[in-house]
Amino acid sequence: MDFKDISSKFKQVSKEAASPQPRPTDFAESYRLRARMVGVLIRDARMSAHRSVEECAQVLQVTPQQVEAWEFGDSVPSLPQLELLANFLGVPVSHFWGTETISDRRSQRADARTEYLALRNRMIGALLRQAREENGLSLDELSEKTAIPAARIHDYELGETPLPIHELTVLANAVNRNVSYFLESSSYIGQLLASREEWKHFADLPPDVRQFAANPVNIGFIEIAIMLSKMPTDKLRQVGESMLEITM
Image (cartoon, rainbow, N blue to C red; front, side):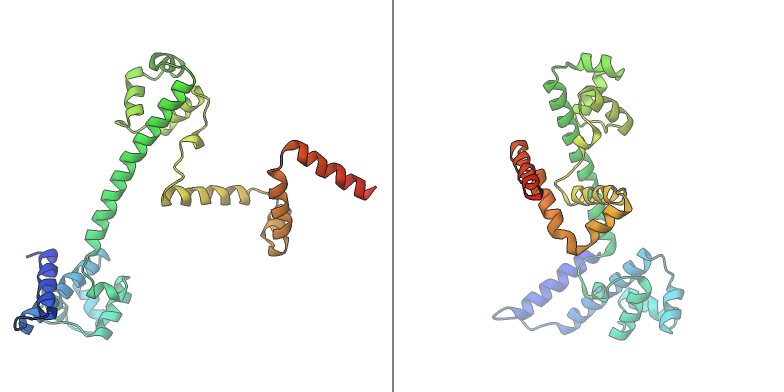
């Protein structure tokens, strides 16, 4: 019986105990299942932290056999012991009364990353095809401009093959786009990357400009600058002429 089976069984026992007309609760079975769940979670956290049974025992000042008994569900540590163990293994103490292992979460994140890569490959391919068609280029014509086989470009456009960045740079230039045109911007990852790019640009500003922008007192001036940057040219010219009249 793996952790999911133990967790499911424990939830079923708890549900039966809480039902309007509960059957007699088998407390012994409930405690046994919960002990096994805690044991699996302890072992999961220890293995994820690459710690040995002996190291955990030394931190908690118990024998290695005691830690092994916890992991097998033969006995259960106290809350203070779990607090020390959580600190040593680098997990929140609530991990030990949860219903999900660290390895399960890692597996889910790995699956999500795989899905993300596949989706992004398709999105980049679609953008490349759109840019190519907007420039009136066939696959063969784009191939001639970039020395990349038309069949490979076709696979890139379908998202069936990941597009290496050095070839993307050449293809982007051939369809009058830059690499930023293909960047992700809508997801959490895209927003995070965009924020990092913005910070990079900010860090590249002259020191006096950075100091001015970072001073909260100057927010009003920055907001005025933003408003001016969005004005049509004729309106901006009128504002400039009015300012000249005031200063004359």
